[in-house]
Amino acid sequence: MRGVQRVLFNSLLIRYPRRNESDERPSQMRITLSLALCAVLAVSGCARISDSRLNPMNWFGQSTSGQVTNAGELRPLVPENRATKIVDGRGLVQSVSSLFVERTPSGAIVRATGIVTGANPFNAQLVPVSLENGVYTFEFRVEASQTAGGRQSITAARALTMADLDGVRTIRVQSATNQRSSKR
Image 1 (cartoon, rainbow, N blue to C red):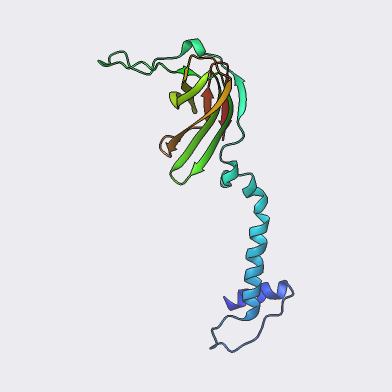
Image 2 (image 1 turned 180 degrees about the vertical axis):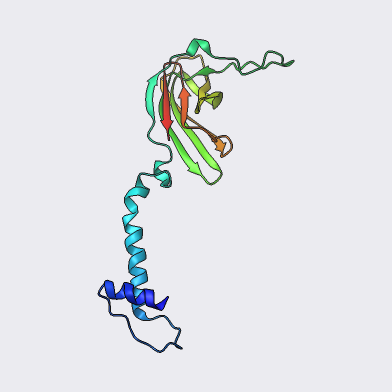
């Protein structure tokens, strides 16, 4: 082993320090060389880490807006053979203005902000609709009074576990007029 080290050090034009074979303490040059090598390797990998999924800022990208395509083809949330059926009387928000997916140690938090016409919107919720082909789709539902009011914004969030996110590549939130999606 020492012969290999001497050949490597001599080929790199680094003077190999001669010392007593019984002395097993590492030399100062070995420590400095090892630290310098680690620092160079760490800095050279920074460009690749900034574009990878290891970077928490790149976990889900910016959300993009799109038109709702299949609003009339929504499947009911309650199976047909269920004895008790509860109908969700809340309506969809008018539009989704923003969507953020924030990583947590146990999964992710999906947070969406929507625009509602009417006074005093309340009971907002992101209701899961489907999980197909890696696309997890939610509807942004809210209750609002029928009295005249201005346009107001309301925010709803939903926590997802790692098991919920298994195989998910896109999270989509739908409203009455548009949808926003965030991709990995």
